[in-house]
Length: 365
Image 1: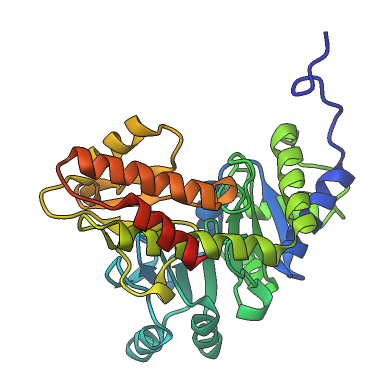
Image 2 (image 1 turned 45 degrees about the vertical axis):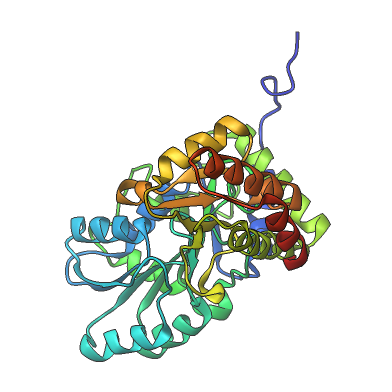
């Protein structure tokens, strides 16, 4: 008996290349786009290890946990790392990047997360890109959470390595990801003797065996299900329109922020300014004497389907996250999340007004 998920025809090199082209269209880029056969951590780590080596000085911007991880990888590569850490409730500014270059003109690599879903902030990449270009540094961007929810434009912003994943705002699979690579980045990899080769992390292997060969023979068997799912989610965005998808995420973020403020009970936006808040997730600070992880557990008992999570690590006590991305970027999901949070706070002995919260959310969209 055949099965639609199991008995699939082979995915041809031409089909694989066509999906890469559609991802390039989504990013409005003329750079090479390489689809890698794994979750986004694969190209995120691979791109750093390929381009950063001893003798490199990197400015690593930390606005959340992924920025911290990138610093660890860079140091492991023998890079001199200058960390620019800002409070997780805000965003980095182009002025801060400019100041870092003034203090350390030797910086030749800048790593930045566009939107930190874990902390709910987003960074002004277009403005930062102008500063990075002025100084000729290589610009590495994690756009995994932002793509599909807000503009991601590697060419216009001067991004040399832009990594995306499909599992958040794109509403696609988690097991496949992509990176756009500029000519400058390829040259930096070729000059780096420590760049991974004959390795699953190797971007240079993909270039030599796939891109330089005219994309006629895949270097290994593709992940068919994930590739077909990626193609389907890109096609859905193309059909609906990227602007409409981004607008849906912005509306969900504004509604969640307004609804949480109207709910009462001491919930406050974790990211202070609306302009710094990511459209994929709204983070909220819980009231005193309420433990965030316990509040989320109560809310999920009321409604197991709502996309709520407690902050990671030390933030598990004080911060909760409403993940309104992909299929969850809808008024229904926002309303259900506010209702579940209201019920959980009431259970904890904190007074709330769910009806008012839902009205405020509806008015904010």
